[in-house]
Length: 105
Image 1 (cartoon, rainbow, N blue to C red):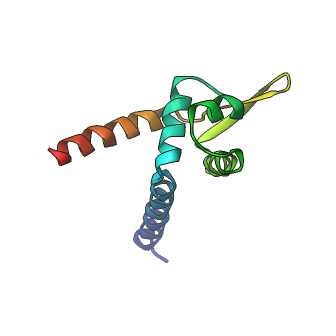
Image 2: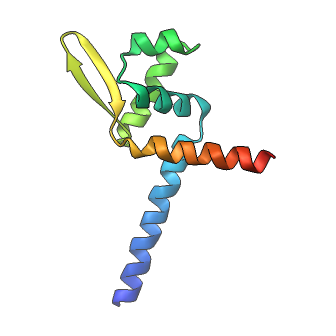
Image 3: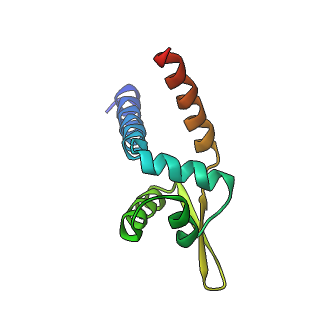
């Protein structure tokens, strides 16, 4: 395999990873979660008060975002706080929001 072929394989893997992240982000509740957690780390109880979802549904979304390393947790006493692992994701969502508004004009 030549260097060029190897580079193409790496790029294809990168494209696939990017696509996977975008697919996961393509859910309104997960977008809300990220924007809420961009403001401050929160527990499941705090998030349930802000969102109109059931706890098992919320937990599934949080687990998915944590599994792809967009969220991380920290324990304080008995409480587990979810927070953004990469604050840059908020900037990405804000840019998408700006683009959406411009497209809708």
